[in-house]
Length: 141
Image (cartoon, rainbow, N blue to C red; front, side, top):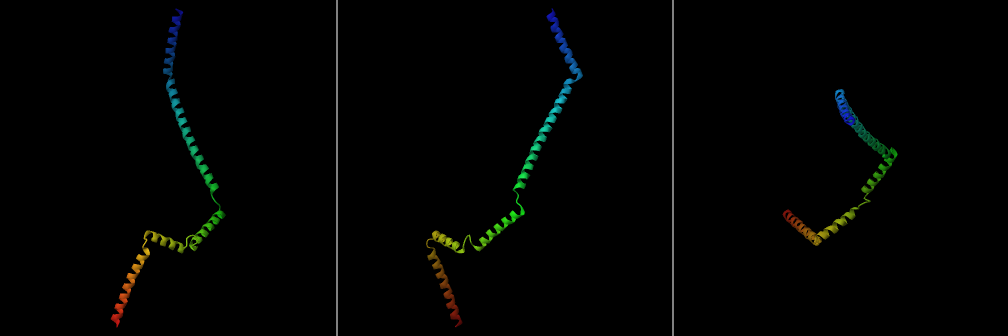
């Protein structure tokens, strides 16, 4: 009988404690604390992400400032570029003759009878000019 009494006593004690917990609203308070802690954790994560972003920006700025050039280096590079541009204008890279040779070779490859065709065209124009001159010469006489 003592075992039965003790089992009944345990059940009643548990009910009493459960009722006291409900009355004192401990569960509600614990839920509120959990919500607050979750909110704090979210804010901490957001702040951590922002700190990482700021660190990245700071590192990028530091790298950019290290890689920037001073005024003397800039002037030296500008002088080198100007000399290269002058070299291009002087024709040191591609000569006019070289361009003409390349064009002539290309035309001959594209049109094997290029010289004959050109000579025929020139002959036609010369004949036309000669006829025009003869006609004008006869009219003046």
